[in-house]
Image (cartoon, rainbow, N blue to C red; front, side):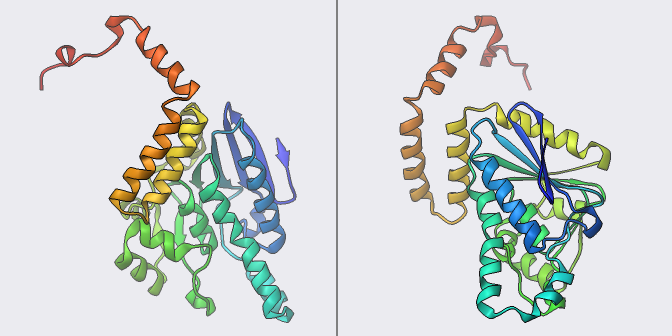
Length: 270
């Protein structure tokens, strides 16, 4: 286990890193110190080629309560330039999650508000405990969304839902979030990490270059047209089809016993 001031990293399974925001007394709220620790940790994991999937979760009762409101009060004396610099650093967190070659799995164990909401749904797969809650909380503080929440919420749930959730400050339950397409699955709280590790382990087994390429294509597909994605898929496929990993996979398939392969004639009639 690796422990920072506000983040711990464990390796529960081969190829899997679990990054835990570890400030439970403040519901893992993001002060600048916490943000620096989270950013440095994620950047380090992103560079680790032995990691294929990352599980992101929070210690205690919450995933992440968003920005640290107490620090907001203390920061009133900062200049506009200093505030912009702070936000630029914090915004590197969702960028790293989106761009890291590993697949990021959010295990939302409790409250995910504001930046915490955005951080969760920036992950490639979002799993939630039955007690998870998602909320925006920006407008009540006289602020607009940050951490890319306006983009992610619109992409995943659609413009109408994004507007309704943000303008009414609606708090979503885990089942609400699943129904809106923000969460892939809801699990009992005690099973959340086990299920998250299970899916992360499966993902981590895939060849690294193919997994990273697939993640990149899916991200690009959010804003590209069909023709563009055909070209991009062809470019990536052209590299991978001559790779050693692909050759090994083809060889492994072709040397399997014939009776281990399901053929159309062997499938039960429906």
